[in-house]
Length: 196
Image (tube, rainbow, N blue to C red; front, top):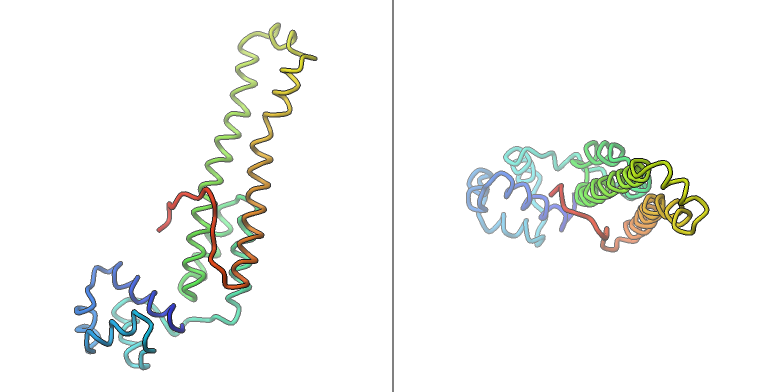
């Protein structure tokens, strides 16, 4: 893992473990200034220091394999097209310890997937409830509505949210895959941060 990603990962893992920079430096037998410089991206740590950081933070920094990083990022972002949360979850779980970018962007994809899955369920619920309400209102009311512009409008508009969610997911997946390939910031609109 190269700087500045290494520094970000060290800082993130240190904070997750509730360690201060001073305590981490003490455990790794280095100066606090060394930890500060590593986290800020000013220096690459020596092999021994990196090994100590990996032991204390329980992370294998040597496992980094960024050769196929762009391929995995593309697959991860394009998996958001299908609105099936299991695919990006498996990809992220498998690759998150091998690349800081995959870890961070995988969280964004998962948050987007969870949000869109909830929106999909809400749209499907409305799709089921509204016709059921018409049936409960009486078969006569439904029959009297046939052929009217209201009935046709309702029949056409009911599946519209499902179609729009599909188009939106496809757009977001393709755009963010291209942004990941060109090292631009990733943005998923309308995404709720469930996974932090």
